Every structure is written in structure tokens, then in C-alpha cells.
Length: 316
Image (cartoon, rainbow, N blue to C red; front, side, top):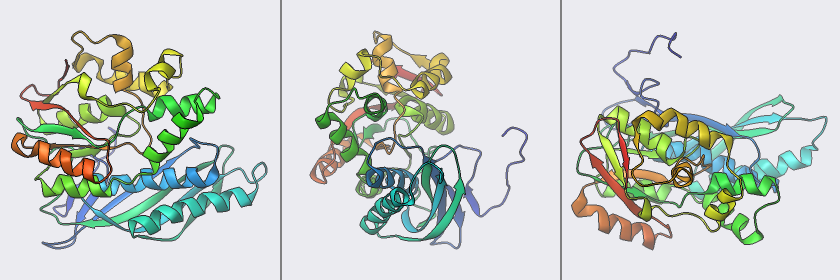
């Protein structure tokens, strides 16, 4: 990416430079397009649920920017010699389930032959140019709220190895198909300007990029971070995604671990699929925002604060 010349245009409000969740292009003073693309390999055995998870994961980028999705296109990699097309139909129906729930249309897409199946969406949404959520918008003194528990990476790794109980697997699936639309609206309502969704780079990875781009730091109260059922037990049994370790390696030099042991820190770097929204609001509004998240069905928590330590994350 270093060899590419960044696009310079006054209407490109968010581009590749900050590594944000989606690109934003201003149409006029009141409207901007929010554009993203995301696809994943299967994380569960049920093809319809995989389609739902992949679609929720892709559209989450729109919500993470404070936007509303309008239109999606399917992105499919399919091994047609090994997998029946009936299974692909189920995947596409899963995405349609999410599109109907979120209120956007899926209008076709593109398919290629691929030894390993992949599925996701390109999504176009809209937002107000002056009411965006970006990973460069966190401010010192804000409280950090996380709208979903962590642990999806550990649990889906356990699912692939027949190590997760039915109850735990179902809890992870419910979390992954839950949209971040309400969390995005609540963030905007309470004056958030900085946000990111927690996906493949884990909580620490996404927060690490956000504090870097916002030129601030973050203090995380690890006792307030919520996890899905059995996450710790499965992690201790060795069900750790490779991506989680890479996330931690990327951030290690800027991370102050305090008294946290390596296993705890690794869980905070757990590579998520369709994770929650992480955003900052003024301290005076944090509890009310948390209450609204709870009322809307989220297992959310206030996990820490934005501090004046540029680029650093401090665990306590």
C-alpha cells in the first residue's frame, strides 16, 4: 500500500489513509455516500447462518461510519466442482434475511470459481457529512463503550474443531447476526464522533488504529470487558485463532499490559467476525448511552477512557 498514491480530492472525506471501516464521498452539504466491501470464509456449518453473518459483518462497516445502508452486491467465491449450488442458494438467502432486516436492497453481484468458499457484500450507504463516525474522531476525556461481548474468534475456532457446546455456538451466532444499526444510532444520539467496529483486528487492533489516527491514547479496564459464554475456557483449551496472535504482535510495542497476563491480553486481541461497535462519548453521557444500549438488547459495557497518551493503550 505504501507504493500507492493517496487520492486527493476535497469530496473524499474518508479514504484509505486512515484505514477506516469504509470510504466516504461527499455528494453535497447534506449527503455523503459510504462505501465498503467485505467477505469471509465460512465460520459456521449452517450455510444460511453463514450468509447472515457475512452480510451483517459487511454492513457493519456502514454503521461504524454513522451511515445507513442503501444497496448491496453479493461477492461470491464458490467451489462449484465440490459444493452444490443449493448450498449457495442458502448462503444468498441468509444475506437477503439481513438485507430485509436492515432495510437495504441486494441487487445482484459477482461470482468466481474458488477452491475455498468465500462470501460477503459490497455495500453503499449514506450519511450526513457533518455527522460521521470515524476512527480519527476519539477525544481525550471520553468514555469508551463496546456494544457486544468479545469471544467470537475463539468460539468459531472451537466450532471448526468440534470443541464448542451447542449453547456456546448458538450464543456466538446470535451475536454475529445482530446488526450494529441501533448501536450506531445511539452513538450519534449521544454525540460520538469516533467509532470503529470490532472485527478481524480484534478490540486491541481496531482501538490501536483508532487512537493512532485520533492522536490520543486509551485506558482499558479489563474487568469491564464482557465475553461470550465459555470464551475463557475454550481459549485455555487452545482454541485461539492465528489472527489474534498477529493482532497482538502488531500492537505489542504500544501496549502497556500492567498486571494482565498473556492469556487475558490475547483475548482482548481476539479476531472477531461481525463484532460490536466501539465508540467514545462524553463522560456525562456515557451511562445514559449504556442504558439505551441495554434497552435495545445489547450486552454492552463501558470499557475504559480516552487519555492523553498518543498511540498508547494502557490495560488495568
